[in-house]
Length: 231
Image: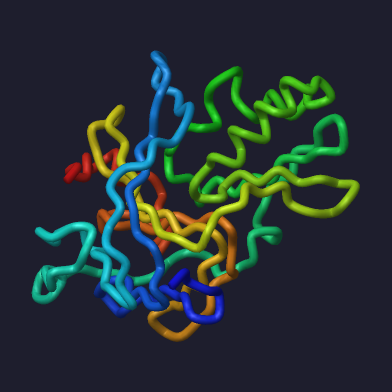
């Protein structure tokens, strides 16, 4: 059975794991880079057996990653959620470009996946999206941003230009940085705080799984700084 939005959800347990329900598919996605280290594409990796429910490690200490093995218990892990509880649009810096496109950017959501960097960086490309080739490349790079820090906005339709994802969770691997990355929630999965707060449902979200983010529950790229071990 495929997950549906009425069933699927991720609940954050207090100083513990992410509790996943609704038969959400779980698999691996690896960042493929160019010679300069800029991210170019995603490569699908391991596919885990489908389960009705499962717990994903949030502290970074589990020996059964990506699953929780109880290592958070007695370890002193502080999973306090510190991210702003403001809808994305209320936080975003807006850069208006050509051909009716804008780029929305919430820097504190950055997961350091680096899809924004190649071909002169998306912040420069937005000024030249009247060129069809630049526009297509810009939309591709922005759409590959796993955290949803970056969103392309069509001013004419007043709609975000988003890639279509099935409801799923991906475990991000980043061999170019010799580390493992965040958990990538795709397709609009409800995320519930440990105190019951319902975060804004978004098409792309990355959650910290190394335990070091200063923007919990979201990834802030700290897995690169701490060299979160790849498994």
